[in-house]
Image (cartoon, rainbow, N blue to C red; front, side, top):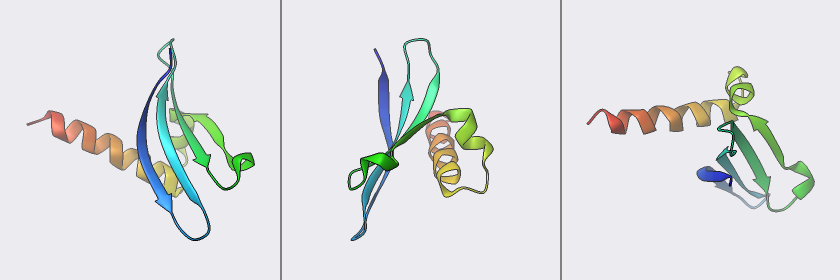
Length: 75
């Protein structure tokens, strides 16, 4: 069974979209992008591939969320 968690959303007059962190049954991690206005724009990529593109705003957003998750654990 696949598990998923919402990473972030963007709502605008142009489009509504969301990013999810997903874990497959084998433990592999993926980031998926869902565009409500244009489903042909949706994608699903391995987490490492998303984070490797450090110039992308998606990679920055995902890394920020991961950092915040681990900061909370330090308390």
